[in-house]
Image (cartoon, rainbow, N blue to C red; front, side, top):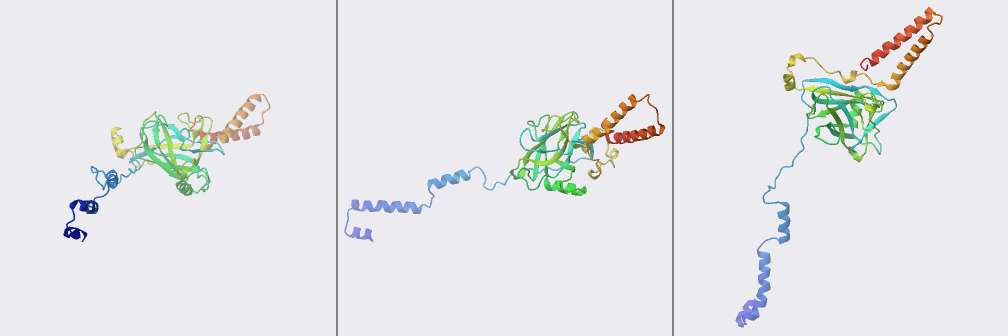
Length: 316
């Protein structure tokens, strides 16, 4: 309307020009429909033109237990110190136990002897997990995975007729292929503990280095009560020229029937009286002989020796 009036009155174009410029700017701003440059930069940053928008999320590979035909006991350490337990941390130098493989194959499981840690505690988490390393706990390839929770420990102990705070065999199942080479030392390494806690588990151990082929982080002369199992795949059995028919019916011992570990204090109690008795008998060779007394002593000695041999026949 204003433009029409201006035209009728023959207003000079120079006087119209200041009004036209703002109008053209408004038309360009709203008519183009483009976004401000700052918004364009954000879109470019978030959605690069050379990468599809609908990229599927990468999922971690879930490992499964090794597929073996036969499984055998390899290493074992079955002495313990009474009223003594130890735990795992995820902190370097406090997160491992070691053993030396005696058979070739794949590590299938490791058994520890212990109990469930306290449920409500500022120190203990509800689960832990990690991996296995060869030769050193701090470097080298990570082999497989493993994890164990307090809930699993309670369930395993319950299947053995035990309460959570009673000690029993605890099975840690290995996930993925963890090769075992005879003569190589391996480390079971704890990598994490849940709930932001520092420790997990209460596991029995022995002093005085009863298992020289390995140790526990707590002390070079301490060894966890443990059992390691090695399995062989069908391919490995073929390489060894062993057919499946040769191992049919060959099963590992059930964990429900595993022998209980032996107290180191009990071991001493068997050894010391036997030694004292030998010293007394050598000092009294010339003393009068009482047949009935000798018969009683001989019977007691025989009982102790037979029990000692039964308990420690594999430890000689």
